[in-house]
Image 1 (spheres, rainbow, N blue to C red):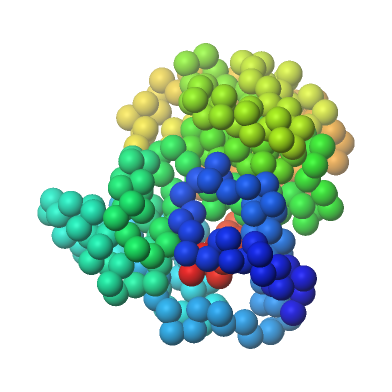
Image 2 (cartoon, rainbow, N blue to C red):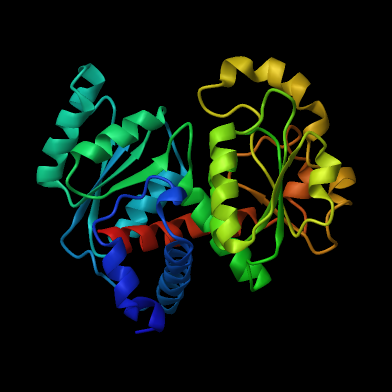
Length: 319
């Protein structure tokens, strides 16, 4: 056993907790989950069996479609010794109007944990309030904490440190940037966000991130100039211009984001050894050029793989 798995105080603090947003976790707890993810990844690569969730079951509620979320949670639960149940909204009575609180209480009698991927963040808040087992946020329109956790795990693996690095996010001020902002604040990473006017991240989340950043010394900066944001960046990050639920705005967003594509010309302003990241799925030729996303700086598939390991850490710690 490593020191990570023997940190009894943090382990006890996390047991039975919900994982809804990174704001709910201390800097030490966020870093513990990252270190645990790296350790569980090492065990899996070495063929070491580690099954702390033997005999336990995770219910996975999907109101939004997914590739990485479904496969990584299902495989991760199996590797930890448990079982995962896929539950689409059409499989549950919530699709026919049953209150989410009633669903939460019923599922809590059957399951050891619930993961939900949904639209409104208030849905997961209501679910967690009524549930008596840990609830994990697989994505809402406001937050994507599992992705942010695996992103910072990936950066740590490639850069060897987190504190003091600069992450530049170019694109839409969506759920992804919300979680990256809070993660940066918790981990001491400087983050610069460039969005077009009218597409800025939620101001309340920005201010909350800045408050938490005071504890770690992280710098948070918002701009409408992609070149300013990406200057001397260690990590460059982007996401689709129209997330799920905003597809009807695609044409308007293409016009608004036209100068925000992460391409070779823009990337020249970053450091020579910058890392390129994207939470996927990606639209090549839209938010990012093929030369960047498929180039030598890209670590998008390391990112995607780490969804498995980060989520295993979350499940092992909370369930």
